[in-house]
Length: 227
Length: 121
Image 1 (cartoon, chains in turn blue, cyan):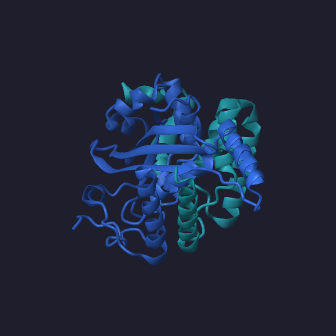
Image 2 (cartoon, rainbow over the protein chains, first blue to last red):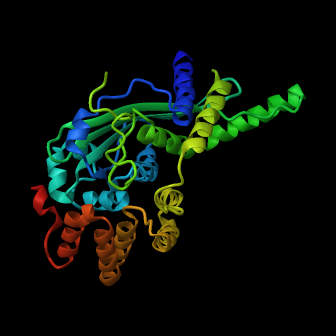
Image 3 (cartoon, rainbow over the protein chains, first blue to last red):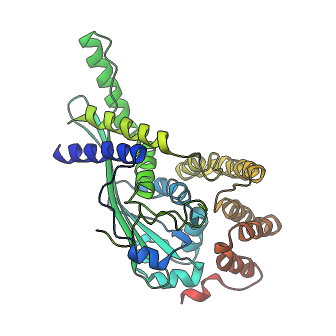
């Protein structure tokens, strides 16, 4: 509960940051700035959750938010297919390989290594809470150095609209909780977490070369040294 | 569980994002939802292919084709054995996104007998 409250505060704060441009302590982007990556290789994700389908489903949500930051993002499904054909179907093999080996294959500036830490749906007293948690590490394909990292989680619980009748509201809530339990709503949650990870000011990725107006012009928001 | 809090905070966050978020940089069409569908059930491959085709079509009109989509569609044609269409799409991706050149040049070369994994060993 403390954790969810903290997440809440962080998310609410983010709303303020994005709309009002207030400042939270930004990350140190010196290594990132020195490297100045142009392209991001998205590889199959590591999975620490119990869901066997999570990694593939997740993969469909990564490219867009990171490309929208102005980077060339390699075709994720094609990369996955080619790695599988080349004996690298196991995500752990790819994650543990030296990024320079991926450079030899793809000519990438950076590789995005994502781990699914949580992907679960729990039913507790008339409510189903769906939780996702992801860890992101961006490594240089040239040197192997870590350029950026982030850890994010989010929870979702659908709520019934109480029409004033307590019993009806209770039944409606039970039905909604059961529906969420049967088919947890992971995708919108995941899309939102990825968007926040990639684009939060001072925490996500600085603008890349395909965002002409911002590229190299957001040094204040994504500083080379934190103060 | 403070479920209500989570939901209301999510709404606050979304409000913040929509207020400040510029229009998307690239045309994505139904890329994400169709790829999800394809992973969920491989028989939906045609839906994914159609979504890519339409997103690219729209992106050509607005000159904002999203990175990777031309290559993704080319890869589906490659799987189908349609090298002509695949190569045409790979070349357009390379022209629009020079970052893809080393990779896609290798893929095109491979179709003429150069092994992909050469650099990996």
